[in-house]
Length: 53
Image 1 (cartoon, one colour):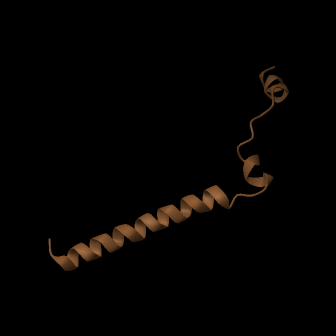
Image 2: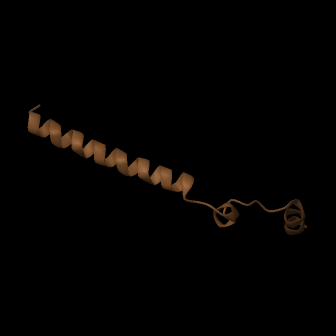
Image 3: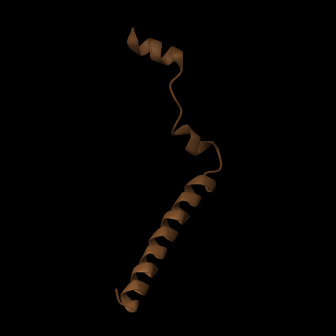
């Protein structure tokens, strides 16, 4: 593989991995507050029992 092609490949790989790492850190550390946690809230037992009856 030529040196120029290898540089382009490695540069692209670093760019893509940096974007993935940035998105991961944004998702981990940017979600402060109760709003994002509300998306994952489960229904209570009373609500689930009412829907079954």
